[in-house]
Length: 259
Image (cartoon, rainbow, N blue to C red):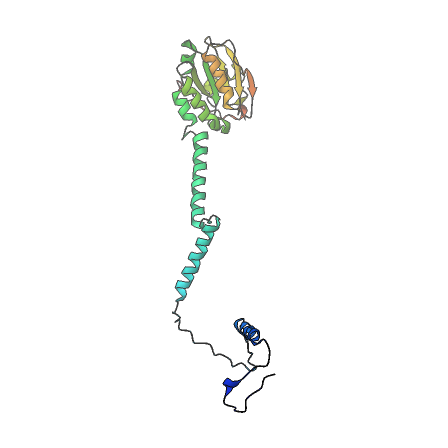
């Protein structure tokens, strides 16, 4: 143990009684160098509430119209970005429907009526029957009537074939309402119209086609006549026709008329 001098102020007279005092000093110095830092956390039992600071951001007034425009533009952009197609308006749909309808009607009229071709047009370009039998060409004789619906329906097809082969084949049309052709009606056995008779160069009948049939029957028979073949591929074919018994017999105004 150490003895302390009687003078309390004279701390410099402090002496140790341990034999090896230097080692203790060194050890004490060693512990003083290895000091640990400790963080002290104190908890406040009654924390004081902190008032929020007033915001310095000013809110700008927004008009309702601009908000609606922005929302609609955002919706449009989102629809475009999502890859979904926009629906056409009702006005555009109506325009498309009108154009489609007009196109369909135009195709029907061009295909079936050939822009106004009628039986009168065919009769105007046909040869007289007597001339056709004497010019040395094969002949197609059509028996028809103005009231015959099938005859009017097939008029464009007949006109097209006539225009294609008129240089090599004669085309003659005879109106069954004309009493002038009573003998020809009996000779060719006309019971229904339209009735197409196919004659060779000598005027002999090789076959006939009656009623509503596809154009190929008329076209292939006319092609066979133009090539001078001995027979036609469709010698006897009957489709839907109008009865010749319903013909309206009338007086002939022009005896030279072949219609």
